[in-house]
Amino acid sequence: MLRKIVKYGDPVLETVCDPVPESEFGTPELRSLVQDMFETMYRAQGIGLAAPQIGIPRRLTVIDCSGGEGEREQHVLINPEIVFEDGSQVGEEGCLSIPGFRENVKRPATVRTRARTPDGERIEIEAEELLARAICHENDHLNGVLFLDHLSRLKRQIIRRKIRNLRKRGEWD
View (spheres, rainbow, N blue to C red):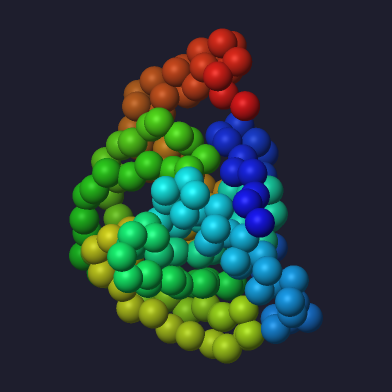
């Protein structure tokens, strides 16, 4: 089922999310939510989606750097924790909750994250380049941080002003 992606300005995007409780692992509801998130992400042509982006303040992200094109590389990270970062990379980022805006953001080149699967299995992923960037971006969402927060004050102000103007014209719901 497609879910509505909330846009910048919705307070859930700046909320530190709660962990997925132990009682929800292995449930049909959690599996269904994960499938809904992948479907919503693919429809929006994204490579990552965090639960707060669909209005759910839980520590859950889905990532597929293939963007649904070709061979899929699906990752589900529940209650993720980045335990190692190394190097740096600068690359363009956008966000499904801030459509139409892209800017360069500095991120680690390599990350290691620990998380759980929908069945509760503990996993560890070491990622580089685009996957590392996506993990950091989605993990930020779980902590109420947006990619805008990584930009200079001036760039942030310019984007916020443009969004205010879009709202005034009724083009930002």
